[in-house]
Amino acid sequence: MRTFLKLEEATLFILCIYFFSVLNFHWWWFPALLLVPDISMIGYAINTKIGAFSYNLVHNRGVASLVAIYGLASGSENWELAAIILFAHISMDRALGFGLKYNDSFNKTHLDVFIKPKK
Image (cartoon, rainbow, N blue to C red):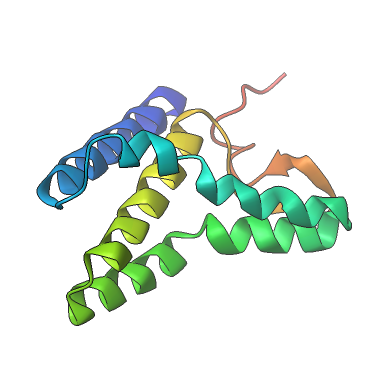
């Protein structure tokens, strides 16, 4: 199951690269912006509860979907780019085993049951 979930996320990441290629941006924008969503970890400088909230807000596909809907409805390629970057970043993180965070620890994620091997 672990390998299947990682392959699914990797496939979504590749799909994001395709969607990016349809937009009118230079190729270097994709790698330049790919790690920008991790700025949301700044909340951990305050405490784990605020850090988990800010991280999970930005790493949530529901939020990315709202950004995509707005971008498509408004015809704004900048918002479409933001949505693609969010989806790509989320998929990349989850393919690498990083998930949404629990309030008590940065290392405890919703993927612990699925991705991390049981001991």
